[in-house]
Length: 177
Image: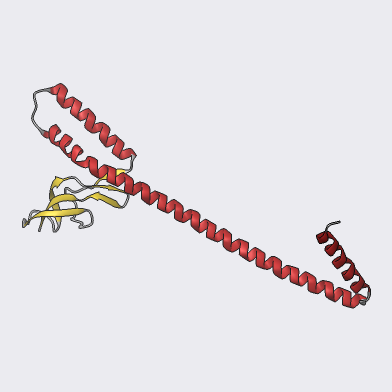
């Protein structure tokens, strides 16, 4: 028998010898105290487990939020680099051309890019006849004209885009009054 098992056996036999010398009331009281100590330890372990579970749940939520923010940041950076290309495609669409096949090809490319942007959650910022919002719009011109409402956007010079609440590019607009 190894040393550890021998020590355990000795402790058990000593406890049994001690318990033989106790009255039944003393033995019951001793057992109650041991049960109370074990219950206290169990309660401490359970509280520790609940705290760890709550911390882990918060960790999972934080990681999920950071992952979503990282996706939005990467997507907006990529889209930001593509916006000048989209602007040029739209200029090509608005240009006069007698070559209908060329124009329809540009329209197809433009439509496909818009579909990809939509799938990625990218939206155009609405401007014409909307009220100016400095969070969404960049006013580059201002006119006084009583036929329009106050802070009404009357012309868009450059489209703005956003993903959810994140602005990729502000709309450049002309504002009345």
